[in-house]
Length: 237
Image (cartoon, rainbow, N blue to C red; front, top):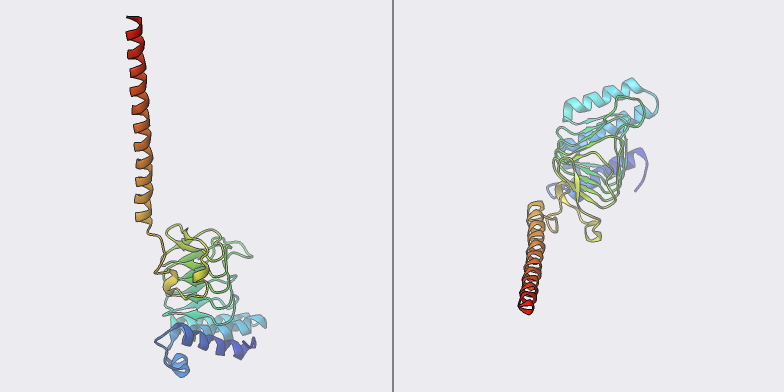
């Protein structure tokens, strides 16, 4: 993919054609997709920002927020083929770094947890999918190909290829090579994702089985011991 300014704009359109089955044509994406509009505003705002026209960059960014409901700071670094689905409520902070082929759904926040200058927002690897309402907070790293489920709150580094869910988010699935090239809507694989409730019941059942076996062993030992005591008594008599 051409890494020029207009090459990235074309790549962003292509990402919608590949990842949104509702997109019927590129002209439809250009005219009717607010997620793409927000990226378009960002690309121009970032262009001004990198040329030290900071106020112009912020003005373009603010206009994009007003039009699309998506707030992307012009200082953020975003790679190629960026895809924002639906888009309303997405926030990307100033020191965020986003790799190639990343997908964000509505309500996602790439936010900071510090008021100090410097790196305070997440670094997102290539091919990451972040589900709707998820919050990724602080200068943490999300590895390539990771999936973050809807409404998760991520406060620690995410390993490559892992799937994170919950508040605070925890790993529910490690790296799965069968999912690396598969697009997982909203960052949650439909097949193979463990049910945390079922997993808890399974763990409890295993513990009960172990306790049951131990009780049987103790009863057997007690019976044998009582038998030995009775035998000793009979011998003395």
